[in-house]
Image (cartoon, rainbow, N blue to C red; front, side):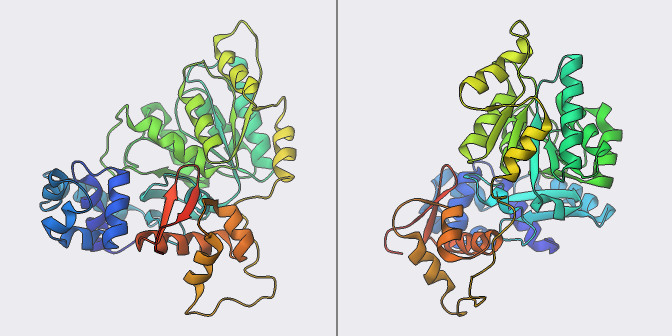
Length: 371
């Protein structure tokens, strides 16, 4: 997204007090675009949300001017800096298959990597020496096997995973909980520069956003959603890594865990995941072999076996017909329609904004009554 006015409308909508992701989706479904939401009447807005939010949408947030200035300075500094909305052709198709994709995604680096087959590697911020070595070695092997390694730039396992991926032949993606004009933790500044050179940094938070504790659990759904599978290297029983694993399961992705000593607190989370059905792995080759026998969700099938596309006036009707009236996954719709993931996701988004399709938890879609 390069248009300054379009971006300003998106930022104003998402920065409005009381407008979370669910509210923003309802508003976009009702009015079609951020600028139409912001130009709607109070009564029209109140029909979709409550009076408090409707009133707040009528005036720009006090911080908007400063936030826009910070964002524009960030965009102007490097041509590789982008903001992607759900309808952008470069928006990662794997995220579109999740229940809660970011409405606006900031990227610095190689945006094409967001659509490449990837594996998340996560774990403790205070790993054992062996745990850090495992993260580094598994990530290097996954990188050499052609997978982009996704992690969160945190201390410990995350940092080791990024380093291992950079030592391999592929790239790495860092999903962060701040604006991309900041690096947290600060000691990873040099690592962040290397990631931008070989991969990309990703955030749903606008430039200028500081390190707020509540943002880091939210970014975990992006780590899990971008990836075909999530490897947990070391984790305590109550940790963010287990949240990422749970989100991976909810998105229909694979979960892998490395076992450890029964006496080590860092191993208890991995052992719990294994008991719950995660695949126990002792080498990266086992992950590679498991994923190679599964269809890569980021590789869309051919549009149609016959090579013919739907007529221009009928694609939405064909997707609605394929939806039926029960909840259905994107993979099932791809099989029914013959469309690839990016094309089908774009059509579903259009119908969601038109109010004809609802996005449900677990990456499912359902035709709305009357559509």
